[in-house]
Image (cartoon, rainbow over all chains, first blue to last red; front, side, top):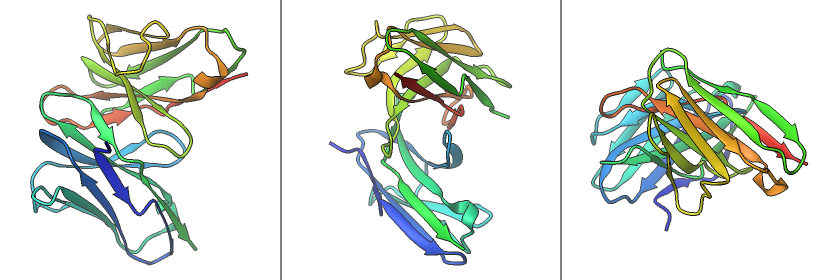
Length: 111
Length: 116
């Protein structure tokens, strides 16, 4: 059973577009949801969300969590070619240190 | 802060060779480190949780005799792929967390292992 499901699997947009990436999850004891950006190497941390309705923002990126609907979105506004990457969503459970990762959304930004 | 260094970044070797990968937390102490494996176009799959001073906890289906993990200090964990075969070729990534509740995992740059 998939604990973390991301959509879309891939996305191609033009520079300047705004994109929304989706992550739904199903875990027994939710602790946190994390977003990572993976380019050619290992993932780099973007956001960690633990509470519903509180938007986290960093520059053109923002994310929010809905614990009732078991859902999170990652928004990127005014996309740039440097935003091209795989965006991973991961969920952690209470009492455990490990993370469950989704398969990621591959974003391609065309000049 | 929270920099994780992984070495080597790339390994190419013959079948039957044992390969050691190092994961270091450079500016913090990590009592727990994680080892993941990632196949092309797939997500990260947790292999094992490495605990300083004790035995690693392996996920179901991961052979502990095949993937030896040693976490001898608060800043270093090693993964040794013993007698590697072509099917072990993959991208191996480690991560570590700062001590304290609700800390995100920070990842090393990964090791691409190719077994010929």
